[in-house]
Length: 143
Image (tube, rainbow, N blue to C red):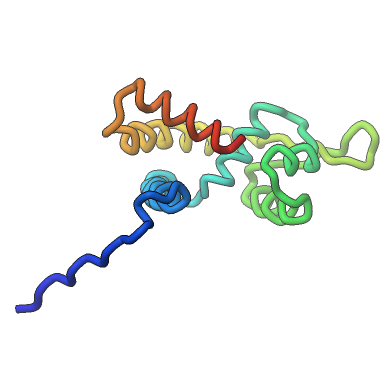
């Protein structure tokens, strides 16, 4: 019979914010992936922002999510190829506005319903006040 390996000593890790945040992020992302198959948290975020800001330009969206515009173009190409997002020529003809398609709105609605259940699961160990405080503290860290 084999014994379970003894846990490694953690040293300074438990006291490091970055380490604790990373462990929490991994747990949240695992549950998210199981809850919302086929969409990453980042892509859902883009869909939410486009839905809330119809016609937003690629540049403004890249700025809002803190990503390089050229990187974002590839992600938007993928979302467009899946029929979730459409680009329309802007008023000045040099820019494209972004809109969710009917399929994109439907997928986002389904994803948000699953995300609500996911959020309840990951916050189940927190009181409502603790959840609010955690959100406040995370926003403070993010600056």
